[in-house]
Picture 1 (tube, rainbow over the protein chains, first blue to last red):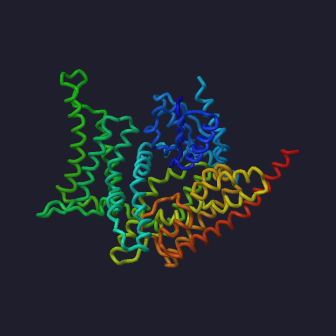
Picture 2: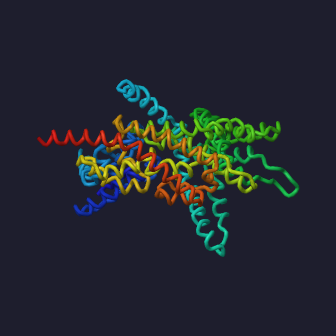
Length: 103
Length: 409
């Protein structure tokens, strides 16, 4: 199973989503690692990551980050504002899994 | 208003985005964030000192702060060229670049040469040397980058590769230290003092009332259109760390602290519940008539207590003029109150580093100046922020409620 990495300015707000996603993953009996880091530390944490999720306030960096992680075969997406705001870990997890399983 | 919003989205936002994508600035940002844990250990000692006030028999641990936060310029000067080269895909040279920048920095700091050896001023290694570290780091990265395209040897040279590598990395290192040697040692020019002087107007502006307002307001405005406030750290953090260090040194020398714009002041009195003082708003959301806003309030209240307000900002403020406007007003009014409270002596100016921004309000207020007046200032600012947000919140809540009722029909 590939892991999920979240990133935002300091890894703080995304940390809350990550925590909710871990809860949701537990409920679904999924064995995967979900962590949140600062967007400056993505490359140091990229091993074994399948999907990278970015906070909506990092939209302006999305293209650059996508370019950076291309060689690692990691898929990336921006977390929808709506789900980020309400810390809806379950929906975000579902979206991440969908992206992970896409060919 | 619509015109303004269009201007923000079509002109300002893309420009800011381009700026943050800049290699040199993102390297600075990475360096600032990477050194944060070292600053936080310093903050830990500040908390410890509060406890020590009550139990004076505990050992003095201030040295732990001196050898972590107090070495911040050395960490920065290593990391800046390291990250510039990493971002420029010159991974081969990034560590060497870091070492070279330390060498250059040690030359610039200009030790006093005595019979006993080279005597360094320890304070230059801390936040006091921050701007010198930034200049030295960027300069080193610049020189090493120039050499990237250049090699002593032709591609088909018979010289073994490892020898070529030695020469190719030696030359840029030698160039950097030679320039440092020439300016500082040969010409006996005090580059350190020069750089500090060049940046001191910037510091002075930051520490004035308009400076304090703008440095708080501009990142808030950009945050309110969805650009992370962290992109300003490369500018704000050096200014704030230099200021708190200057305050600490003033107190130690028996003088009065004079720098009101510090991270400590921002965390204790301005960013109550996160940038833009949104804590009162998140409490109002809990009592909203609109279901959506109430749900948002419930989700966001705990992060808000820890001064994390991305949920609030993305849930109802970003690109929503009704709530963006009060957030901006708050970001003008609160810095003004806080500036005057500090310079008039109504509350003590913070003198000890405390950068734990996720520390809940009131606790952080106490930790930064150990004074009841600090708590009162936080309370006043919270009430003012609440008063500013309230009418706007009411309008928005009503609007959302009507929308929900319409959808329900």
